[in-house]
Image (cartoon, rainbow, N blue to C red; front, side, top):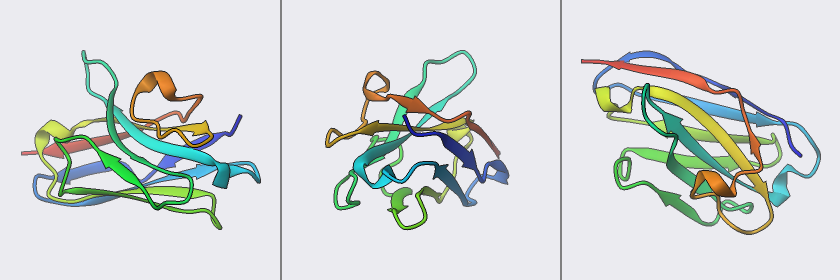
Length: 124
């Protein structure tokens, strides 16, 4: 399995931006599909965005389409989530998840490895 460490969370006003990073250990990270998920207090963890191992294919939850962008740099073993036009309802702990192979991680059940999470708080 790959080890994942998220960073970049924080407190931001509504309409602001943040960029999350997910750094992975292991020389085979380029063979993993990766995604971002989030969990708000009292709610289940939900899918946010996913990217194929090449970076050529992405998927987004409807709630973030047009505002968030997922990308990856396999040379740096890192996946990013650029979040723009943030809303208070985006407040959650954001987790990076990965799975070895070709299937994009668009549901929690597909994830093999999780990071520890990073808190994002959007104030109104």
